[in-house]
Length: 411
Image (cartoon, rainbow, N blue to C red; front, side):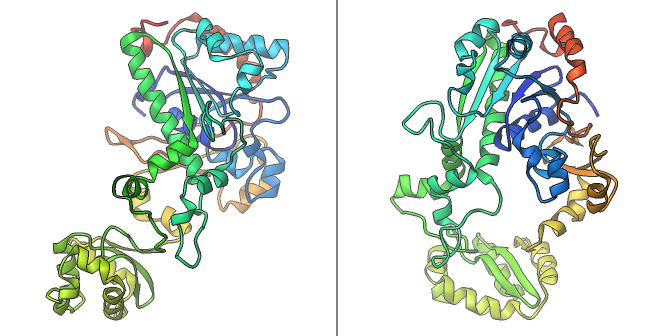
């Protein structure tokens, strides 16, 4: 693999479960050296989370394995004198520190931002929390489910009969982690110009509201409160999930020419001049009638055939896949999105056999740099796997800057 954009950047990862580990996983994929600082004997809670009880018991839960490849693990008790001393040395020479404790926890063990900035004026310190470090809810506990509810996300998910529904994966954690990774890379770029570190206060609630895009802006700008529409797209029609002969099919004929092509290919060209469906707004107002007619036509062929026919003609259309089908798709394999790595030391053999192969399959970033995918090169660490390397790591960090950061005026 060629040099990665963050080669030479040193990250202290004090994060737990998902939002923080997801952030630092992406920094690792971009080339950063990530040292995961874990509580002795316990480590990241995600080590005990996942569908395989034996992996959880071994401290290698699937939830941990998914977000922590390529990192090193050292155990430090920040409530002990020795742990604080080692952490202070690491923080003095790090480029980035990421934590997702409740607001103020790191300060209470002796490392507020003021102290960290004194130790290291060039440090980029990113605190990820449910609600941010300030405001009336800053001390409230929060998990993804809580943020999904408070952001309004659940209120627009599902149908009018089934809403509110939780999105089927921890989207608030994921968005919070990505927002943090973006802010960190921006702060590192800024530091190359002015030499200054930054304190980044990431609110998962605010990041989620920002990611909801049109659902929020339609209300803020136009005063229209979004409603749950199930598998239909509120911005256009026909746009949503339809019925092929053998199962569901997504179609997004959002432009006029796409709509007309869809009508012709389904042998319903008469719909083009039907005044109920003449333009975008008319089609939205008469969505149910239009969907009924199109479903009758689409039931004549299987979903895979329609996917091929419509896509070839420029109408976005595709089957609805399971997760298992999605990760096995030729498109995913063709871009090198998945990495095959050894399982970590200490993984129970029975758990490896249950996985269906001798390698651990992990996702990458979805970004190609100069044509090459960003994937992990080493497996997730066992708890404290790199404890013995800590003295050498400290010596190396204290020895000087990476060539990649040689022009950093703040260090």
